[in-house]
Length: 269
Ligand SMILES: Nc1ncnc2c1ncn2[C@@H]1O[C@H](COP(=O)(O)OP(=O)(O)OP(=O)(O)O)[C@@H](O)[C@H]1O
Image (cartoon, rainbow, N blue to C red):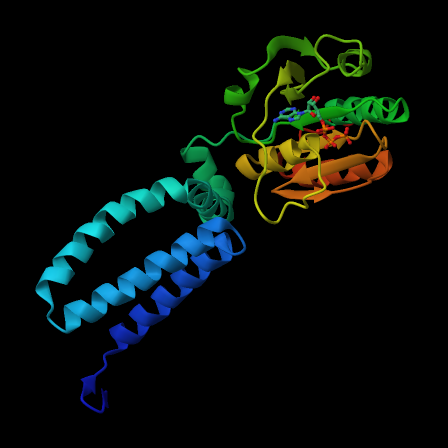
């Protein structure tokens, strides 16, 4: 196709479309943050570079070319949080990562939580919330949480209501940080979770709630938060925080989220 003196192929249109989508995605990730200004600055320098290159100004072109090369490395450092989030979104949402057949071959284990564990944890949450003790409980789905377990005190104890309740008692030496539940066992307490710091996170949220969001952004785990101040129970999955959930609904939501591969107890005959 010819437009004036330009010859446009369908590949050029596809190229322009893909670049637009990419630029929009980058803008969407960095909008509102300081990184968006850096991105805009870099884009303007790049447009200027294309202009001087087109005009054949060789000296300026070579200086800008060098600047762009160093700038690209600087961008990776500045945007490391955004790049990480971008790759996580892609990794989480592709059909490949939700494909059971591929999971089997690429070693993604199935969710291991049992109904019994779920019931005990929710029961413990009910007690903790009514006592106004803060809590942060991570329930493993498929992702390996070993890295986070290592930040705390390893317990490897069978899940029980008295254990979870006493761990979050304000006089317990292990009440700070998060408890991680894996495979029907309290693997560790006092664990440190990644804190969400994106612009989507409401500024009035405290660090316990931010840690819950951060953990559910970084992994597919379900994270329960109980507020020490209000006694409210919230649930964070896939980077979203669902606030003020009654215990009965919490059990339903957890079952629904973790249910894909949940191990149900054998039916009584
Ligand atoms: N990165 C983290 N990983 C694990 N636990 C954390 C992390 N950051 C904070 N916490 C826990 O949260 C507690 C502080 O909670 P903070 O009051 O800041 O949060 P909050 O969201 O306002 O919760 P609350 O409503 O219970 O006060 C800490 O004492 C600690 O136990």
